[in-house]
Image 1 (cartoon, rainbow, N blue to C red):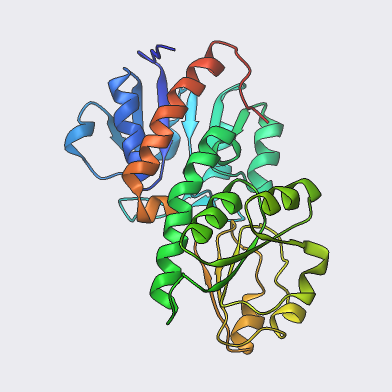
Image 2 (cartoon, rainbow, N blue to C red; image 1 turned 180 degrees about the vertical axis):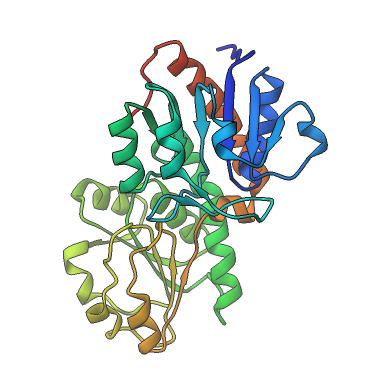
Length: 301
């Protein structure tokens, strides 16, 4: 599919180096691009750099917020220019009905406001093509963290991956390829069956309390599953790396109380492989925008 975004007014509000790569691609495709939260860049000379988000979104057809999302109150803190956060709850009411709004995962306040305003909200992190490809730099970043934090090798280590979705599968496969003894926990029986086919130990999430002998636990479930009751059963040397969206799936206060190191590792693709992660967005987002702008439906929620 040949993508042509010539003259389409698009605003990118905040972001990291992933959105920087996307901005370059959108300019190459002819978009009328307005940027807030980015310092001047030699490859973005034809973009409009603005300090005021309300001015930037005036008359646009598309607003792109970061893959790194907002906080629970709707503020965008991810900015390459390190300036004050952007309040997306102030911006959305300024948009006209049917404006496309893209964001990694919309917090409830953003989802509700977009619905009230008649906006077309697209959660980019939930699009299979993006999520599956993003699982690669996420898994590599998680492995890097584990290697830096553990006094032992991944090879021969006892690993648990909680949540066996798109990210969990890629991570578990990478761990197994390095010679780890990997268990996968999930609620879904089909996912657990898939874990068996990969040579992993399947654990129903309801039975997780029976399994505590791990060197490292990687969580991908965006809900509290590693509770205080579970954490107190672990060896204090167990390392926990939480990859789920904030606030994660770990009781971090309890982990600290029990002397367990627990790391909330957010937005790893943008930190460990921003060029690759940016290319993923650049390959997918322009095509999605053209489909949506032409009335193709896409993934609006």
